Length: 538
Ligand SMILES: CC(=O)N[C@H]1[C@@H](OP(=O)(O)O)O[C@H](CO)[C@@H](O)[C@@H]1O
Ligand SMILES: [Mg+2]
Image 1 (cartoon, rainbow, N blue to C red):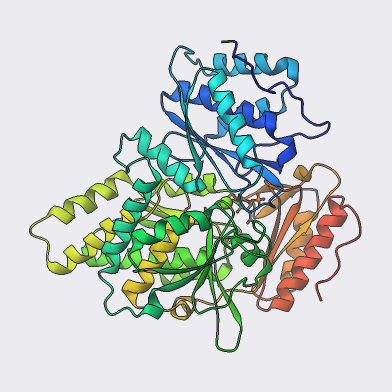
Image 2: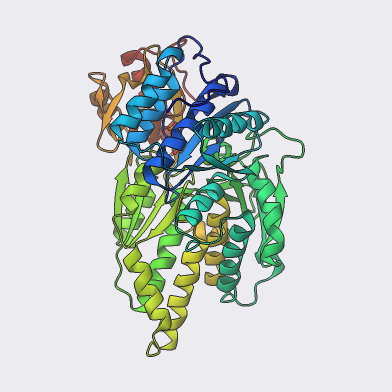
């Protein structure tokens, strides 16, 4: 099994840098990643041999700054790599030069991998300057173990997930090409928008902020397929600005600021697996339509269609602790849908959503999709063909069928989600303002605290909503929360940055800001904060 180590796979970690696979793969400054990429090529090859399927490796650091990079591994059905293999990834990434071969042999033995099996790995990259050489390192890693590669070059993360799923389902999910992706999604979108009559050009126009990343490039490519049913006005298209700098979904969500002004706008993140919407009202006020609003819009639409089609399928919405309290209340109390809360990170939401007939999952930051169980899809397909179904049921079930085709079920996908949202708004004749009026968000604030020890001194439970360590922290948070109306707050160590995240919401922005600040101070004092004490926001 000795691989042809033609590359710098034995290059050592910079001292003191222990990389964790994290919430969504490795991420750090691109200059530390060469050997990690090569090793992930090796690991993906082993995973491919083990699963006897094609595996994906995406080179991207998503919403992180342009100087960073990272890598995400994709499992056979297009989902994120399974937890045990995240562990192997961390093990390999941090292995010393002279123990790398031993680590590889350990994995092969533990997983009982037959090394005579062929291997196939799909590789994609985002637009970061470092992505070209880093994706070459992945390709070299695969080749050194005799695996076959297909380099898709510049693709969005969800496009690569789609390719992997298409390949392993032998074309059932679509054709594994970028053109196949555009064709599948645009056909479904055009079928859906046929049901929206008399749309004006204004209604067809959408302002899209491409975060100066891969999403902008791919949106340009896709536009002709949409035959003017969606008229995209693209900004931050990468022609001048810096990736994710003062633009993109993360900037809009965290800073609560609009990089463009309009009646209906959206922003992608750096690898186009997240989206948020927003608009500016007549008074010039910014209104955010985040992942929670998206989940509400889509689940309301699907629930209505299920009723019209007379289908008895259970629909659930999966959220994280970051979901706005108003959204959870609306979904549970008004819409009467099951709501479940998981840890942060799409892999957790995805698995929870698989438990239902229809699982709508979104992180508040706009990362999410909808999963339809095999049984649900079968019922829908059977009803489409049923000659006895009346016109209303037929119309509804055909809409459901096209919606399934439009959704990228492998992972959250900014382009696919955008088209679903545009179709739903068109079919229901809703403006962004109408959508926003479904419920009113509680004002909220997110802050970061840097601690000197390992940030995992903060340990949490109950889907990260309660801290179990350091001692006294949760009691302090509980006491602080009681001072405010409709308040909630929690803290957790980030899985992608070296910080502790603080979240607070309350009845007014002042209260949310003040609570977030007080909780930050508690983290700083009880978990050993670095530098000056957090200052009040006002
Ligand atoms: C509060 C927040 O937005 N956290 C993000 C962020 O994770 P952290 O573990 O919080 O750093 O990056 C993840 C990967 O993109 C994303 O899934 C998640 O929602
Ligand atoms: Mg992303």
